[in-house]
Structures are given as C-alpha cells and as structure tokens.
Amino acid sequence: MKKKLVSIIINCFNGEKYLSKTLDSVLNQKYQNYEVIFIDNCSTDSSAKIFKNIKDKRFKYFKTKKKIKLYASRNFALKKANGNYIAFLDCDDWWYENFLSSRKSFFSSSDKYGFCFSNYLHYHQNRKKFKVFLRKILPSGFILSDLLDNYFIKISTVIIKKKLIKFYKFNPYYNIIGDYDLMVRVSQKFKAMAFQEKLAVIRFHEDNFTHNNRKMFYNEYKVWINQQDFNNKVFEKNKVQLFQRLEYLRLIYLVLHKKNLKLFFDIIKFPSLMFKLKLLIIYLLPEFIIRFNYKYL
Image 1 (cartoon, one colour):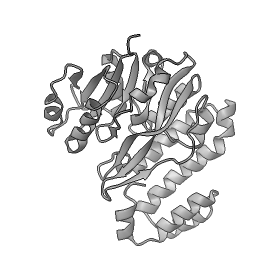
Image 2: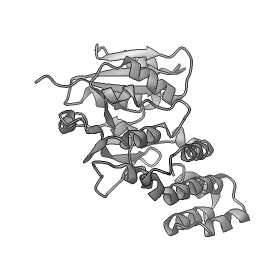
Image 3: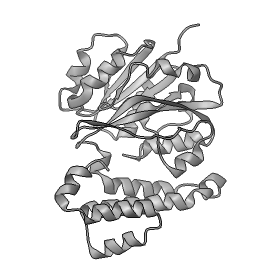
Image 4: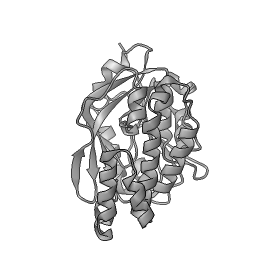
C-alpha cells in the first residue's frame, strides 16, 4: 500500500535565526513521503537562501508578491499543496524524527476524523530550558467543548485531511487566533485524534508575534467571541469560560503595560481564583522581574 503524501506548510517572514533547526527536523523524519511548501512572505533576511541551500526536489519555494497577513499566507500555501494530508510547522519550531511516522493510525482512519494533534514541549529561548506544556491526557473524538474550555493545540502539532481544506480555510482577517478559529470550526463537524507523545517543540522567544501583540490578541478574541452562535449547546455551556478568558486577556495586557489602582480592584473582582492569584502576583512584582520572567506569558 502506497504511503500517503503529506504536505508540510512552512510560512516564513524573516525567520533566519531558527529556520535551519526547523528544516533539519523535517529532513530527519523517519516518514519520508512528504513535500515542503515554503512560503516566503517577502523576507528581508537570509531565510530564502537558507531554504534554497537544501537541494531536495520535495522542498518547494514560493514567494508572495507583497507581505500579507499570516493566515492569508497559510491559505496561499494550501493552494500549492498536493498531499493527502496537510501538516503545519512554524519556522521557529521543530519536530522530533517520529512526528510523521507516529501518525499512521490517523492516515488510515475513517472520514469521521478530520485532524490529529499531539502533545509538545515548550522551549524558552532566553532560559535555554524545556518545559512540558500539558501533563494530563489529551482528549480525542469530538473535542469542541474541550477547546472552548482551554485551547491546548499548537498548529505545529496538527495534521489535517486535505479534502477538508475545500470547506475550511483560515480566516484571513486574523493575525493571531486564526489557528484556534479553524480548529473550533472543524471540531464542530469532525472528530480529532490525539497523540499523547511529545512530538514537537514550540519555541518561545522575544520575537514571538503573539506575545508582542497582546492588545491585538485581546481585540481579535473579542471579535471572535461576538461572532459565535451561543444557541449551540456546546457554546452555551462554555459561555462563562469564554468571556472569563476574554477578561483575563484584557487584564494581563493591562498588568504588563498599564498598571494603576483601578486595575488592582478589577483583578480582585475576577471570578477565577487561579487566574486572580496569577494576575495579583504579576501586578505586585517589580517591573524588571516582570520583563525578564513574563515575556512569554
């Protein structure tokens, strides 16, 4: 039986610092029936040169005509993909060698399963330290309620069936939460298959877009919540948690950037004890400690 072709999408803008590690992790995969769709989003560094140094016909280079938003770039990549399955790998993350080979049960799964994902490690660049992201068992099956309660999927761990892409594309409006939006939409109709092994490493560093744009994160999440159908029983069940998370995003931005006395009392009123304590600790810490330790919150 012929192995399924996997299209690995790597979107890149000025990723030279970590790109070689990312590409090496693809070359070292035990499962070799793949193609790499590399989208250069008008980088001004040596990203293109690093990629083109790989002399492998499976590694395909494309460049956008002008710099576009991340999720428009992902959609552009999807049009170039030829595989039965689509995997995503951010240009600062990397995979372990069994990332693709471990997914064979998903490759032979029924149409009820739309995508799979795995556990992963965080790598904090400034501390040179690995950290386990999630210690509990990842859920499989219909996971919509789990996703609304807590977003635990990283796009660099996801493989999705190509035929779903005809119906589920990334929303090009977003800059940050497009991955979450896609996973939520797909999870309303299809099952997910979770792999408990830590198969990928997500790198946290000072150039991470999300962590440097907290206000944008909050604004996008607010727009996203207001677009959801709370007549849906699963959404209705998780409505309180969704709006609590929205308020948390607002408060964490203010704690890190705009401390004042009113903010302190807003934190005191926050309903979740765990998040309240976290916010209070950050609020009370001296600014130089916050800068060093909470860059990757």
